[in-house]
Image (cartoon, rainbow, N blue to C red; front, side):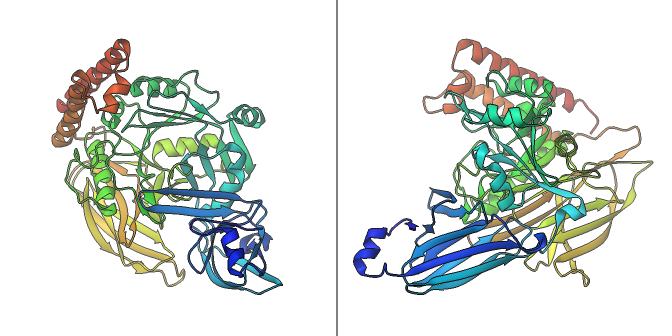
Length: 531
C-alpha cells in the first residue's frame, strides 16, 4: 500500500471512490552497468503534487522556510506501489553525472503498470581522474552505502559525532560496528569506486562550524574553543573543514593555519531554492555588500574566501549538503578531487588538503594553468609573465561562458562547444601576470529558485624563492572580524547565542580570549610582510 504524503490521506482517496486502481512497478537500471538495477533518487507525485512513497524504501522528507525536499531511494533499484487509477509524475535522478528522467505515468485500473527507467551517463568524472565527495552528510551509517550509490558519490564523510552549542554530543548508533568493519585508516570500502570515512565530527557553536574528516578513532570530547579543537584534529591527522566561508570563527582558525579547506558550496544551496537567513558573517559583516539573494550569498562567501587568499592563507575548497538536516538531496553541493592513483582514503584526503579540487552544485569545471591543476604552485623566474590557461566546463545544460578569477578579480570568458563531445565546453587563454598571485575559475548562474555555483581551488603563481605578497586591505578586514568577536565575548548581549556558548564558563571564556589574541597577533605579523 502507498503512503501518501502531505495534503492527502489514503482514507480520503478511498472515500472518493478513486482508490480502486492498479499497481505501479518500477525498475531503475544503469546503462553503464550492463543494465543492472541501481538505487537512485525518486520523486513520485500525483496530479495534485502530493508526494507518494512505497514501502521498503529509504524515504526523505524535509521542509524549511517554504522549501521542501521529498524523495525516496529504493535500495534494490525496484519499487512497487498500489495507486488509484490516474496520472502520476515520476522523476528519477542519480547525482550529477546521469541524465535525469522525467515521465508522466498512467496507472490503469485493476492491473500492473510496468515501467523500466534507464539511466545514462552524460559524463564520467572518474575516467577524467576526478572523484566526487559530500563532506557534510547527516545520515545514518547504515544507509550511507545505498545513498552513495543512489547519488553516484565516490567518497562521503557522514557526521558520526556532532555537538551543537552546549547540547550533548550526538553519536551514530552504529559507529562502533562500522569502525570495527573498516580498514585500519577507518575507511569503509564499498567498491573500487566508493568508500566512506567512518569517524567524522562537527563542532558547531551558533553561527560557526568546524567539520573534521578522517579520524581513525573518535575524539574523546568535542570541546570549545574551535581553534583548540582544530589543533587536536590536526594532531590526529584529520582534515579541518570550515563548513561555510561565512563561519563566524573562520578568520580565527585560518589565521593560525588550523584550517585546510573552506566550504563555499555548502548547505545553503538546495535543489528547490536556498537558505536566505543570516548565518555567521552573512549578510551584515561581508567584505562587499551583496544583495540578499542566492547569487548574492554565493558571491558573499567567495568574497570572504578571496580575502583569506589575499592574506596569504593557502586554503582549498570543500563542499557538502547537510542532507539529513536541510531540504536538499545528498551530494547536491559536492567537491571533486583529482587523483593520479586508485581511490583510497589517504590519497583522496591528501589531494583534498592540497587543493586539487573544484566544487559544484551542477557542472564540472576543470582548470589548468601551464598544464597544472588547482593546488599546484608555479614558480616563475621573473614577472611579468604570460601563462597558458585551459578551461573545461562539462554541463548537461547549454552554457556560453564562465569566469577566470585572478587575485579575486573575475574576468568573463566566452566558451566554445567541443564538436567532439556534446556536453564539453572549452577555452584556451593567455594571462599576463605582473606579479605573484593566484588563478581560479568559477561559474555562476542565477536560477528561478536559487543559483548554480562551480568554483576551482586556486593555482598559485609565485616568484622563485619569493613569498606571496600579502594584500593589506584583506588582512585588515580579517583583523576587524577578530576584533568584533572579542567585543561580543567581552560584552555579550542577552540574545547572542555564540557568546553564550563559547563563553559558557570563566575558563572557557578565558581560552576563547587567548585564541582571539593569538589570531590578532598572527594577522599583525602578516601586516609586516611584503606588500
